[in-house]
Length: 243
Image (cartoon, rainbow, N blue to C red; front, side, top):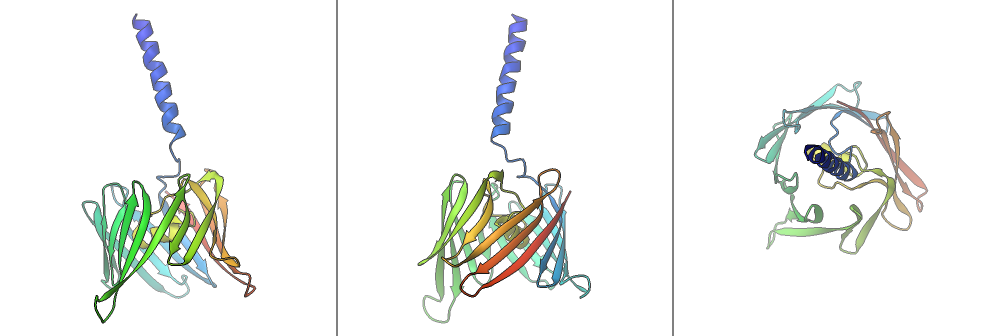
């Protein structure tokens, strides 16, 4: 009887471990150590420091490349799940977030309000001050999801559509998450799959090209913006190291 009980526990542990591994994104908890953002011949170098809870504690920035001597930083101070972000000039932004890691509101000149459908972002409202009643305007952005991925962002009559590489997981350094990470120390959109492009219109959009390290983490992101009508393109790259 004792042997049967041990065997049953062993089988249950196998089932549980299999279920866990099949639903876990192995890249969800990456800790980016440095980012080199290169654009138009200039490089911004970011060094990311984390606290004991693995929240971003600070970002130390060498702006425009080491040749310019321009330096800055962002310091993150947490009160519960919410936090402030203060720069080297003592300017700060207040971010209201919940314990699920969802950003709810960003208090800047243009206040941003975030609404979710469960774990997925459904809407962002941008409230901008104006001089006449009601003393603000509201620009709404609506997010459409499928298979755990944002497929479209719509504001008024303008819509943008994302494409994905369904064979790879989304990561903190991917094209959707990285700019949010640099703004807020975390991303408010976390897709299941790796974004491969963005279509702004019939003739304009972005293409995302990735290189990976030996552990499958993104080592280099190349974001190419194109405009077929103007026969032009623009490129920004992000090079990463990890803890």
